[in-house]
Image (cartoon, rainbow, N blue to C red):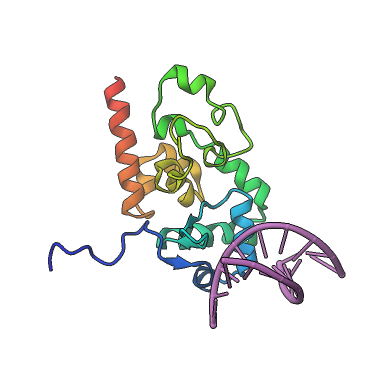
Length: 173
DNA sequence: ATTCTTACA
DNA sequence: TGTAAGAA
Protein backbone atom coordinates (compact mmCIF):
# COMPACT_ATOMS: atom_id res chain seq x y z
CA UNK A 1 0.00 0.00 0.00
CA UNK A 2 1.01 3.60 -0.46
CA UNK A 3 0.94 4.20 3.25
CA UNK A 4 2.93 1.12 4.13
CA UNK A 5 6.33 1.88 5.56
CA UNK A 6 8.79 1.60 2.74
CA UNK A 7 11.23 -1.07 3.85
CA UNK A 8 13.95 0.99 5.45
CA UNK A 9 14.73 4.52 6.31
CA UNK A 10 18.33 5.52 5.79
CA UNK A 11 18.97 5.49 9.51
CA UNK A 12 17.17 2.50 10.89
CA UNK A 13 19.30 -0.36 12.11
CA UNK A 14 18.87 -3.44 9.96
CA UNK A 15 22.40 -4.55 9.11
CA UNK A 16 24.42 -7.04 11.08
CA UNK A 17 28.06 -6.39 11.83
CA UNK A 18 29.10 -9.16 9.49
CA UNK A 19 27.31 -7.63 6.54
CA UNK A 20 28.57 -4.17 7.35
CA UNK A 21 32.15 -5.40 7.56
CA UNK A 22 31.74 -7.20 4.27
CA UNK A 23 30.29 -4.16 2.51
CA UNK A 24 33.00 -1.85 3.74
CA UNK A 25 35.82 -4.30 3.30
CA UNK A 26 36.81 -4.45 6.94
CA UNK A 27 37.11 -7.25 9.44
CA UNK A 28 34.39 -7.62 12.01
CA UNK A 29 36.88 -6.95 14.78
CA UNK A 30 37.93 -3.71 13.12
CA UNK A 31 34.34 -2.52 13.14
CA UNK A 32 34.10 -3.38 16.82
CA UNK A 33 37.29 -1.46 17.41
CA UNK A 34 35.86 1.64 15.71
CA UNK A 35 32.90 1.41 18.02
CA UNK A 36 34.91 0.99 21.19
CA UNK A 37 37.04 3.93 20.12
CA UNK A 38 33.94 6.11 19.94
CA UNK A 39 33.78 6.56 16.19
CA UNK A 40 30.60 4.57 15.95
CA UNK A 41 27.44 4.14 17.96
CA UNK A 42 25.91 0.74 17.28
CA UNK A 43 22.28 -0.03 17.87
CA UNK A 44 21.81 -3.09 20.07
CA UNK A 45 19.10 -5.68 19.83
CA UNK A 46 17.57 -6.91 23.09
CA UNK A 47 19.98 -9.82 22.92
CA UNK A 48 22.96 -7.51 22.63
CA UNK A 49 23.74 -7.85 18.95
CA UNK A 50 24.90 -4.83 17.03
CA UNK A 51 22.78 -3.51 14.21
CA UNK A 52 23.77 -0.81 11.77
CA UNK A 53 21.99 1.39 9.27
CA UNK A 54 22.73 2.14 5.65
CA UNK A 55 23.97 5.50 6.82
CA UNK A 56 26.50 3.67 8.94
CA UNK A 57 27.91 2.06 5.82
CA UNK A 58 29.01 5.42 4.50
CA UNK A 59 30.11 6.44 7.96
CA UNK A 60 32.39 3.44 8.33
CA UNK A 61 33.54 3.72 4.72
CA UNK A 62 34.55 7.29 5.33
CA UNK A 63 36.43 6.37 8.47
CA UNK A 64 38.18 3.63 6.59
CA UNK A 65 39.09 6.07 3.84
CA UNK A 66 40.45 8.63 6.26
CA UNK A 67 42.72 6.01 7.75
CA UNK A 68 43.80 4.36 4.51
CA UNK A 69 44.10 7.36 2.19
CA UNK A 70 44.51 10.39 4.41
CA UNK A 71 46.83 8.91 6.99
CA UNK A 72 44.68 9.75 9.99
CA UNK A 73 44.36 7.37 12.88
CA UNK A 74 41.45 6.52 15.12
CA UNK A 75 42.61 8.93 17.81
CA UNK A 76 42.79 11.80 15.34
CA UNK A 77 39.40 11.11 13.86
CA UNK A 78 37.80 11.02 17.28
CA UNK A 79 39.35 14.33 18.23
CA UNK A 80 38.15 15.84 14.98
CA UNK A 81 34.63 14.68 15.68
CA UNK A 82 34.95 15.90 19.26
CA UNK A 83 35.14 19.44 17.89
CA UNK A 84 31.75 19.36 16.21
CA UNK A 85 29.65 22.26 17.53
CA UNK A 86 26.91 20.20 19.14
CA UNK A 87 25.62 23.26 21.03
CA UNK A 88 24.99 24.84 17.65
CA UNK A 89 23.62 21.89 15.71
CA UNK A 90 21.41 21.04 18.66
CA UNK A 91 20.99 24.28 20.55
CA UNK A 92 20.89 24.32 24.32
CA UNK A 93 20.79 27.09 26.90
CA UNK A 94 23.99 28.92 27.80
CA UNK A 95 23.61 27.64 31.31
CA UNK A 96 23.49 24.02 30.22
CA UNK A 97 26.19 24.47 27.62
CA UNK A 98 28.72 26.02 29.94
CA UNK A 99 28.38 23.25 32.48
CA UNK A 100 28.06 20.48 29.91
CA UNK A 101 30.76 17.81 30.23
CA UNK A 102 30.66 17.26 26.46
CA UNK A 103 31.12 20.96 25.68
CA UNK A 104 34.07 21.06 28.02
CA UNK A 105 35.73 17.96 26.58
CA UNK A 106 37.74 18.36 23.42
CA UNK A 107 38.97 14.82 23.15
CA UNK A 108 35.71 12.89 23.05
CA UNK A 109 32.64 13.48 20.91
CA UNK A 110 29.45 14.18 22.85
CA UNK A 111 28.02 10.74 22.15
CA UNK A 112 30.79 9.23 24.26
CA UNK A 113 29.90 11.34 27.26
CA UNK A 114 27.20 10.02 29.55
CA UNK A 115 24.65 11.90 31.57
CA UNK A 116 24.07 14.70 29.11
CA UNK A 117 20.99 16.88 29.16
CA UNK A 118 20.42 16.12 25.51
CA UNK A 119 20.81 12.35 25.98
CA UNK A 120 19.35 11.34 29.32
CA UNK A 121 19.14 7.67 28.41
CA UNK A 122 22.33 7.74 26.41
CA UNK A 123 20.73 5.58 23.76
CA UNK A 124 19.45 8.24 21.41
CA UNK A 125 22.73 9.53 20.05
CA UNK A 126 22.39 7.48 16.90
CA UNK A 127 19.41 9.61 15.87
CA UNK A 128 20.99 12.88 16.87
CA UNK A 129 21.91 15.46 14.25
CA UNK A 130 25.35 15.86 15.79
CA UNK A 131 26.22 12.20 15.46
CA UNK A 132 24.81 11.96 11.97
CA UNK A 133 26.43 15.17 10.86
CA UNK A 134 29.77 13.91 12.01
CA UNK A 135 29.35 10.80 9.92
CA UNK A 136 29.74 12.72 6.70
CA UNK A 137 32.38 15.24 7.67
CA UNK A 138 35.13 13.38 5.99
CA UNK A 139 36.85 15.48 3.41
CA UNK A 140 36.07 18.93 4.65
CA UNK A 141 34.36 19.75 7.91
CA UNK A 142 34.56 23.45 7.25
CA UNK A 143 32.54 23.41 4.06
CA UNK A 144 29.91 21.22 5.64
CA UNK A 145 29.64 23.41 8.70
CA UNK A 146 29.95 26.88 7.27
CA UNK A 147 29.30 26.77 3.53
CA UNK A 148 25.81 26.19 2.20
CA UNK A 149 27.19 24.88 -1.04
CA UNK A 150 29.19 22.30 0.81
CA UNK A 151 26.08 20.23 1.25
CA UNK A 152 25.36 19.84 -2.42
CA UNK A 153 27.01 16.51 -2.94
CA UNK A 154 26.67 15.11 0.51
CA UNK A 155 23.10 13.96 0.25
CA UNK A 156 19.64 15.00 1.23
CA UNK A 157 20.04 14.27 4.90
CA UNK A 158 22.90 16.67 5.33
CA UNK A 159 21.12 19.38 3.37
CA UNK A 160 18.24 19.12 5.79
CA UNK A 161 20.58 19.43 8.71
CA UNK A 162 22.19 22.48 7.22
CA UNK A 163 18.83 24.05 6.54
CA UNK A 164 17.76 23.49 10.11
CA UNK A 165 20.93 25.14 11.27
CA UNK A 166 20.40 28.06 8.91
CA UNK A 167 16.89 28.60 10.24
CA UNK A 168 17.99 28.64 13.83
CA UNK A 169 20.59 31.21 12.86
CA UNK A 170 17.94 33.42 11.32
CA UNK A 171 15.85 33.27 14.46
CA UNK A 172 18.75 34.67 16.43
CA UNK A 173 19.05 37.78 14.30
C1' DA B 1 25.27 -20.12 11.95
C1' DT B 2 26.49 -15.74 13.77
C1' DT B 3 27.86 -12.67 17.17
C1' DC B 4 29.14 -11.47 22.00
C1' DT B 5 33.13 -10.43 25.37
C1' DT B 6 37.56 -11.08 26.93
C1' DA B 7 42.11 -12.47 26.36
C1' DC B 8 46.28 -13.18 23.99
C1' DA B 9 49.99 -13.30 20.31
C1' DT C 1 45.40 -6.45 13.68
C1' DG C 2 43.92 -10.91 13.99
C1' DT C 3 42.62 -15.24 16.27
C1' DA C 4 40.62 -18.33 20.08
C1' DA C 5 37.66 -19.66 23.88
C1' DG C 6 33.25 -20.20 25.68
C1' DA C 7 28.53 -18.44 26.11
C1' DA C 8 24.23 -16.90 23.96
